[in-house]
Image 1 (tube, rainbow over the protein chains, first blue to last red):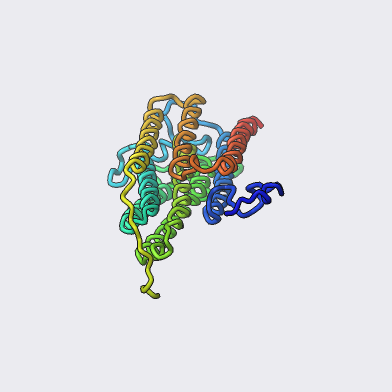
Image 2 (image 1 turned 90 degrees about the vertical axis):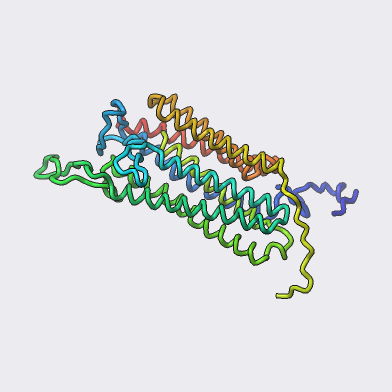
Amino acid sequence: MSQTTAAVSHGRSEWDGGTSPMGVSYGKLMMWFFLMSDAFTFSGLLITYGLVRSSNFAYTGAVKDFVFSPNYWPIPEKVFEAVPFLHGVPLPLVFVGIMTFVLIMSSVTMVLAVEAGHRMDQKAVEKWMLWTILGGMTFLGCQAWEWTHFIVGTESGTILKEVANGALVDRTSAMHGANLVENQYGPPAFADFFFFITGFHGFHVFTGVLFNFLIFYNTVTGVYARRGHYEMVEKVGLYWHFVDLVWVFVFTFFYLV
Amino acid sequence: MSHNHEPKITVLPPDTEKIAKLWKTAGILLAITVVEFIIAFTMPHGAAKTFLFVILTIVKAGYIVGEFMHLRHEVKVLFWAVLLPMIFIGWMLVAFVYEGTKIIRI
């Protein structure tokens, strides 16, 4: 680029064109813009969750005496305590911990793919992209199990109340699991937020896996080798890390707090 | 597709220093998650516990965005363009949770 004295005397700044003031390529900057808008959407969901949760009564008794009731917000660790193949063994938050581990590990393999791309190492990009796709699919499988368990519910269920002849009476049969109208765990909004927040995140993981596969395919067929750079790996990498980032917040605000 | 004039590709050796740093970041993220688990089952429920969780979450987010997404090493104007709106979002969360505790009394 020519930086002539004439240009300087006309008051050229780095915002007058010809340079990249943000220091990143157009594609990467647009990915950042998109991720910001996506962050606002997720924030909207999580903030609404915070508002509704804090406007419901909290369970105040001892944790060991906790029972499900639509009258107060459930303690998350009492809802999410099942692990596949260990039926009836209460292992609070263990499965969601495994899911967190899987997603963080797939974030690491993604960033290793980006590093390999910088070195034009096609074989290494292929290897790390495959691991990343595997991690994403494992997470999706875990989430499918988690949803199924949440929807089917526990054997005992919870006896909900209904209005009969103007009085609030116990129903004759227990409610098992959850749907968008009612659930055995707590207020209806609890299950609604579970479905919407983890569902919206899961949808992002799903599309992320699709993008990752596309990148893997293009790497294998040598598209990026011919292009001379692996910047697409970086762009999709940004998206994949963002998905991991959102999970960190979902994990804290939905499962821990 | 023509393969007559394929560019000569030079594969560089792995940057072991950079890779070690990435694994270190991953180790920190996993360690914080383990700490969160320990806190979840040892501390009584309350404001202090929630506060601790939020702090640890922000630390984790910092490592993911800063190191994995490389934002810490980007130019300042991009760094702040991303971070500033998020600070307002953080305030929005606090405001709405506080609002919720008032709604409960109505």
